[in-house]
Length: 355
Image 1 (cartoon, rainbow, N blue to C red):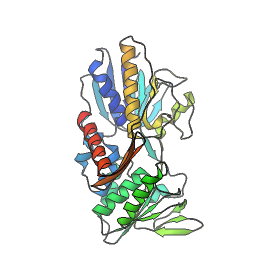
Image 2: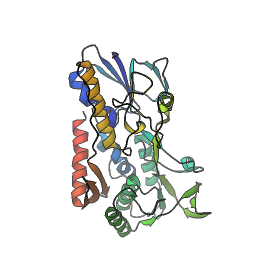
Image 3: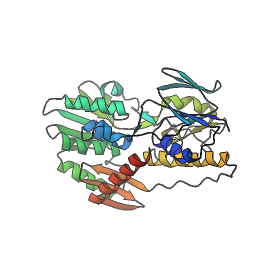
Image 4: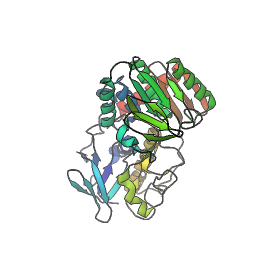
């Protein structure tokens, strides 16, 4: 294996890889980490950064430290595979081995002007921008959130607590919010949101968004003062050239081998939201993939056989404001204070043990 490793992205997958290999990096290995931020960001709490219930420092964590790991704060713009280099906004970085852990971007599903007129919580910078936009709204404004999945639900509930002076409407295209979770959770969460005076509208297929309204069902509209898009994600487009050496799954994620290497090109690996999996993209999945990739690198460095084990997700947890939550762990439904406490503990552990 090569000695010059470049890691694109220090999110959950990238940091998990680093934490796994750092205690055992051979002396001839050098790792360069390229990330747009100078810190690790706790992405599952970006909704709280946007709502204003958490400040920037609460969603930051230190990068893992090692003398053979170099951090480069820059924006990756292009992967030149045959030239073995990454083109960034400020420089070019050569690699012998490349790990792509770039995460995801908003998927607007070709809805006209959705990207132009909606706010986002997909990145650290966009979440801060959304918070500033919300803070500048006059009282009694109408906030519309498109997307009733985990991010949309958490954002709606937190906004209701932080900005009770505004009207909040949540739009979901499925028959119910949190469509992938059990009906018991759906009923509990919807009841909670409605108790918070949040309008929940389901079976809403958005057809267009302009500067004043969200349109659906043949021209029906929901006017807004600020709209947040939380309706879907897709792999970071910088990873797209790698599809020439693989295939795409139904979510356009890159199919990889058991060791996360491209099927038709050696020494390029993909983890996180860009990598195909039987599971939906999540911070938990990226963390497990990063750990497995680290174990593969260790096995090669140490001359041992690598045996890939099946990934097992523990479940899903969500916040409903600062006191209650919902979730499912090992098929057991949890509602109320307990899942809120568990998720708080999980996030605390990640933040305090990633550095």
